[in-house]
Length: 111
Length: 113
Image (tube, rainbow over all chains, first blue to last red):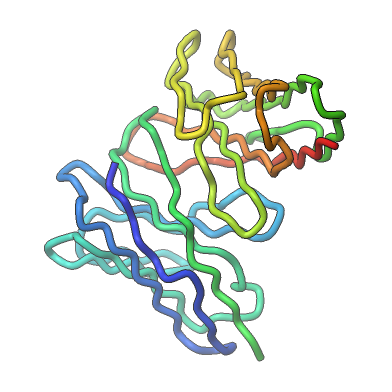
């Protein structure tokens, strides 16, 4: 299972774009990259998933370079409610498989 | 209303007692997981199950036990052998197919004194 490295924390202000980068040098050919958001005392929530290039949904974009050794979660125009911990997870798709989370990035958004 | 339920939300036990945390899902998912989270820390995998009657140890299985007799249920027992059982416990499930999304329950906060 590819190990991931993320910044421990990041600070931003409302209305700004936030980019959180995850390093996964040992990613395997069949691995996908998935990002989760967690608020205090709640379970993580799926944000976005991708394999290569760029993926966009209604809440975020995920940028993955050609070598796939890193990925960047982009949150456009953050608000106070985006203050949370963000986890990058790399593993093979399909049911089962050991899914291990890293330490995550604590994002703090201020006025 | 599909999802994962964990009960109870808060649980208090005396040291030396075994305690079982409930996790039920109605998403028809084959895979289920148990994680432990300590204050300010990430999630650590305790056990996971890919199918009924089968489960594997995660990274911190010592002092815990699980069973998977039904597809919908994956209870976790915190035994007296677990040295630091006080934590936030999260259950998750995941279906098969291309999507990699795990669905998490609301969690159970266990306090052992």
